Length: 203
Ligand SMILES: Cc1cc2nc3c(=O)[nH]c(=O)nc-3n(C[C@H](O)[C@H](O)[C@H](O)COP(=O)(O)O)c2cc1C
Image (tube, rainbow, N blue to C red; front, top):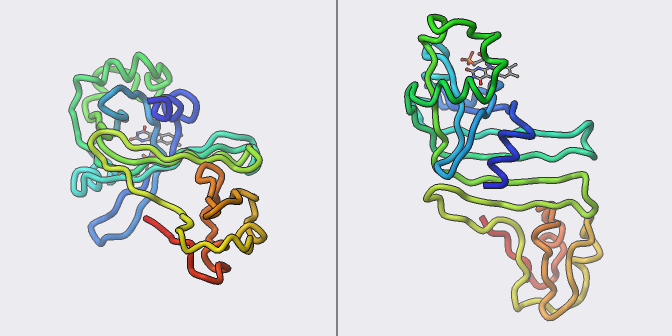
């Protein structure tokens, strides 16, 4: 819930990817306007290509960022299933986001609008402002969490070659050595350099 809240309250404007009728990706800017225990909410107009792509595939991926520049930036990415829920929530979205009345000023002008809910999915938080970097993954709805990234198995001989090539210095010594998942860039250097193939890529 904290991640969904951050997306709505702190980031708000995101870039959303959908897939067109040829299976090709299309992106557009979309404001994520509300959240609750059932997911994320945004609105769009039924005349848009974006609407058609959403209804056809029922799936989207989005990324939003907050920060002045790369090294002060946090990104939040979400991918998951989206369904149209109609207009019942529209007044609430306008109430929460009063700037919408500048774009759609009258009740009449809102006739084409409809609301979507992203009700199930997974996401990732990536914070480049921290040293070492910080990342976390999450799921919502009935999505099953999958393991991503690199893990060191019992084949590890504690030689330290992985630690020497880790750009974030985020491998802890031990038997076996362990990757600090919350600081890992997923660059794969440890996997490449391990002389005994002890580093597994998951996900
Ligand atoms: C900052 C920003 C936020 C936007 N938010 C929305 C939104 O929440 N809903 C929407 O339908 N369009 C929104 N738009 C407009 C869409 O990005 C635009 O209509 C886009 O062309 C839709 O894609 P399409 O042309 O493929 O249908 C926003 C545009 C900007 C610049």
